[in-house]
Length: 128
Image 1 (cartoon, rainbow, N blue to C red):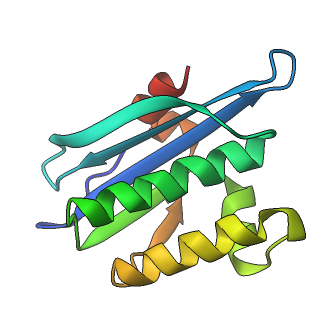
Image 2: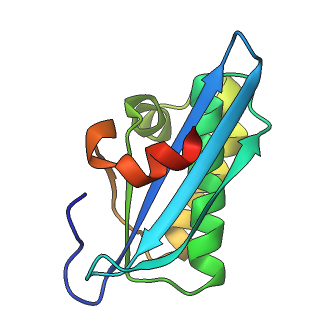
Image 3: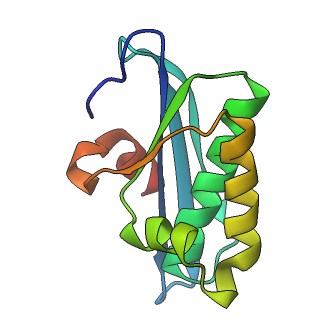
């Protein structure tokens, strides 16, 4: 995980869903520009599929950043599907897309980037 620029926070999110167990997990972590852990945790997800779990992690992470006034903020997710749905939403994810867009706007249009799962080891570990 690359650190953000000086005086910028970084939110990393991840979500997972097991179709066999019909259960998901989500995790969020916010660090400062020195890589110090500010806040983060994991939860069981209400999602019914993999992409919904990733959206849930992002949405709750954005709420968390907003509630703690962590901005300026950079956001990273390992989900290409989330990034694609933010640009071209699928009907199933419309409400989550709208919520995430609104939160990103409230967070001063925080940039949202893709990060490979290997670069997001802490959030990935929390999800399991």
